[in-house]
Length: 132
Image 1 (cartoon, rainbow, N blue to C red):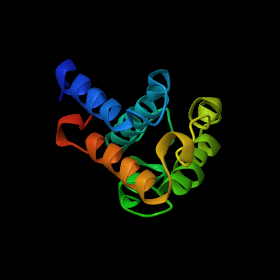
Image 2 (tube, rainbow, N blue to C red):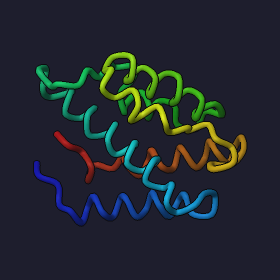
Image 3 (tube, helix red, strand yellow):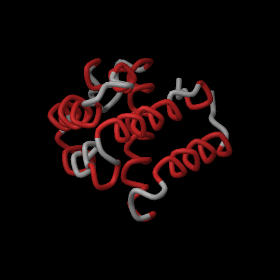
Image 4 (cartoon, rainbow, N blue to C red):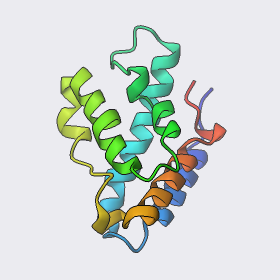
């Protein structure tokens, strides 16, 4: 199904709204586009076994969804999701490992950070953003 630009734009704006206040607006893109990218490649890999990017189940968007609400969600995304994708796809290493989902200065400390990342994932978990 083809996604409407308005659905994608709406999700991007919602995600930016979640990040307001904790970091400079020029840094939103690093987090928002990383999440959108992981959602996209995870959905594509589910339906296309010949997809050019290797997305292991433990490094997928679904694995990220399973982390929602956990106090160490940022650390787990960095270690398991981002680093796992980078290890499986050398071409992605510099792209996705530069984003730190465990940064307390940008995302808040402890529960605030966990809640913010959980909310961001929920935005991209919307059925409107399934790329099947």
